[in-house]
Image 1 (cartoon, rainbow, N blue to C red):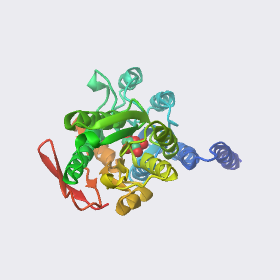
Image 2: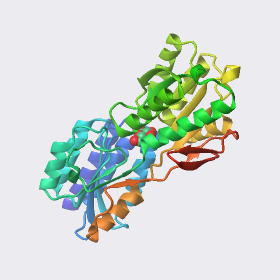
Image 3: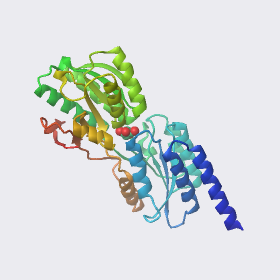
Length: 351
Ligand code: AHR
C-alpha cells in the first residue's frame, strides 16, 4: 500500500511541477531532478546541493546540463538541485535547505557578487564545504568558501577589445570613429562587471567613443528591446558590444529590422557586433557568416571541474582557491590571426 501511495505522490508532484513550470523547460526538469535525487539518496554517495542561479541563456542551460550530467549516482553522487529562478533570495533559501539536509558539499553558482556572507557563514558553522562556480562572491573573508572555478571575464573582454582594435586599425578606421554601445549582462555579477570594465578601459586607452551602457539581462528578448531603444536615440552606432551571445542575437534582430546591415565593414556602413560565450548554435552560425565579428569563449562545462575539486577535498587536499578555465577567441574574419593580452598571445580560431 505504502508503495502505491508513494507512486501516487510522485506522479501527483510531477503533474503539479509540469503545470506550474509552463514555458520553462528547465524548471520542470529541475523539479524532477529534485524529486529523483531526494528519493534515491544512499549513504555511500557524496551528497551535493547545487544552487544554480537560473536559466537566462544557452550558456546557463549548458552549464546546468554539465552539472546534472556529472553529479549522478553512477559517478558516486546524490544531487539535490535547486534553480534560483534568477533570484538571490531563492538561492539563499536553497543553501539553507542544503544545510538542513546536511549535504556533504554545497555548490553555488551565484546570481550576483554581494550579499552572501551570512548564509556562507551558516554553511561554515555547519562544517559544510562550499564550492563557488562560474561567477564569484564578494566576501571579505575568503575562508567562507573552499574554492572557486570559472572564467576570467575581464580577460575575455580584453581579448575581444584587442581584436576590435587590431581589426579596425588594419582597416584604417580611426579610434574616435568607433561609436560603441554596450549591451551589458544582468548588473552586479562577475561576468557583467569584468566585461563592462574591460570595454570601458579599452575605450579609454584606445580613444573609442563609448556612447552608452545598458543592461540586456543576458537575454535575447531584452537585448532586442534595448537595441531598438538605442537605435531611436543614436544614428551613428557602428559597434555593438554584447555581453553574451543571446544578447547578440536579439541585437542583430533589432538592427536588421531597422534596416541596418550587420558585418565587420564599418567603413561601408555595416554595424559590427561582438559577443561572448560561443555556446549558442545560432550565434556560432552568425559568427561563421560574419554577422558576429568576434566571440570570446566562455566555457560552461564546469561539472567535471567541480567533480575534480570535490575529489581533491575528499582526499584531504586543499585545491587552489581560484581556478581559471582556459578559453579561446573565435572569428571567421581572416585579417586578425592572433591577439596579445597582458603579454600572452591567443590564436584566433574559426567559430
Ligand atoms: O556567468 C556566465 C555568463 O552568464 C554567460 O556569459 C552568460 O551567457 C550567462 O548567462
